[in-house]
Length: 411
Image 1 (tube, rainbow, N blue to C red):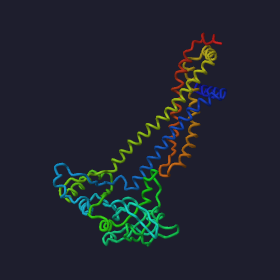
Image 2 (tube, rainbow, N blue to C red):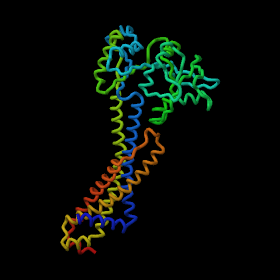
Image 3 (cartoon, rainbow, N blue to C red):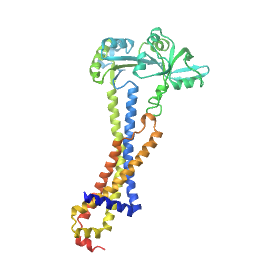
């Protein structure tokens, strides 16, 4: 312990005695440590943002029923299947006890033109069931959502996202109970969604929620479609563990409603999470590689400094060996000096990483903001210290093997 303390004191002495050289040596470690902590913060922010998006768009317990071409053996009778319809919704709710909610949607082909008193915007209009608002976690700030009675009576009512309201109505105008036109058909605004923050930046994520336009599903099918098919069919189960059994039950039900034609496939959020985990690993490898390179560069600098320091202190090492110091004493001292340099760089890098994260938090969208955790800071300092030990190992071994006689002869 005494040798370690002496090495640390000697290390600080070297830092203070050669300020410029020490600063240049520490700079690489500081950059590497800050990059490492920053990378961990960015990945954690991305992971949190992705998890938030999955939660806000139905959660991991969601099963999507997608359309596909019938197998080759059924191609000639594929037309017997009615495709995905509202009958599937009723059948799943009736025959699949694990199905907590079932919802269906369809859209106006080619998009729609919304207009109000000379102001207009083009948007994707979705015909929905009431369960859509619960499953996809849409909340209104004013008015109400689409109800069962709206679909039963095929009411011409609409719920708008905030960006659509801004496009159609002058500032200060209450959108509720106003009549707009959708491709020339009148619709009464009965609800306005709350404003959502963007998850992934750009036009994706929650920003799409702000552009949402909802009308009753049956109304859309009657006014704008020539068939009864739906574009989206989703099932929500209570627990992820129920998904395998629920998939089997849903498959049996749809086989019956589709008259034996195998023209649907299933997609779960577990697949989505698996793809995200692969993306996260690629981020860690790529960004972590940059951080590790920075630390390696800093380690090379420490090694060079320690070799130069040993060359300057050959006589001092010879005197210590002549007075009885063992090789392990010299080894520990040099390693302690190297560790001190790297540790100092790691601590400074820790403060630099805090500043880096704070800057990134101001420029990155809120849902993906990098997060600073004590664990990440500890990892940064730990890796810096490890680099210091590795970088100082060769100089320490070289110094410990110096012959006392030869060292004392050195001028």
